[in-house]
Length: 376
Image (cartoon, rainbow, N blue to C red; front, side, top):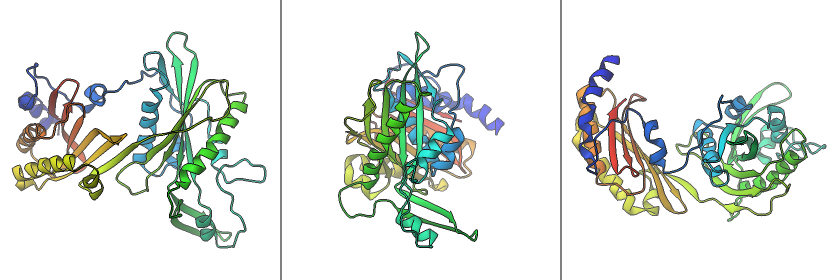
């Protein structure tokens, strides 16, 4: 593998033949080098020395898959930038909501009123059916902190309340037997999202608890509700609504809708939403497959829409056992064919994958008006 990298990095500069401007050619050795300009958004600096979230292990236990963990963490950071300026504030992972506090919220409601998940009423003796009838909805509470760069003081917090769309059950009966299953939280055939409604109710209690806790700083709070996707879904969940609570207040005055959705390519949902984009991606896919028939490339994509507008395209090209020469040619072809689907302000990331390992990347950077390509 080391030999491959040395050889390809010498060849990589020829891959910039797909440039869309007359600017100097260069090499992008990885996606992260261009993440800030490609995403066209402000990025927080982390306060140093960086600290891990004090409930870091809890999020892995509570949220059902890696896609949802990544989406809620990155998404909360992005949404927070609308309220806590990236120029004025450092970001710090949560240091105040500890395991005990979050676990108490996640418990079922007791007679003392501690837990925020539904209590099981009138137990039948069938532990699995009882769990299905009263599914757990609240799954995690994620915290981010914002530190003023000038005075080094905490002046803001962001909270994402994660909610189950599907409750994955694992329960033990009195004899120690384990039962598993899954149930959809919202089983009503209406236009009301029961997950969202429940989340708004528990959010009120969480804000009250935070304000009443003398160990927590009295700072403005940005709060959002996140609905997780199913455990085996290939797309993450969605942020539903958001609100902002000034430091003097302990109630939520209003919620604002968040319209941020993900789609796969190919899919009927994407075709119905945006045939123009779908057809461009289909041509791109067919051109790559035709150009490298011997590799039988498998091509799929993930697209993000915000307020009905396309904001990001990510494409995966899977080519098992690709050799060095083929990789160079494939990166060249991808770079050239990207010109047929470019959108002026929408970043595109194409990953070339060989047996679950990234071996190449092609990026369209709308800020630089440039396509970057290189092996990894």
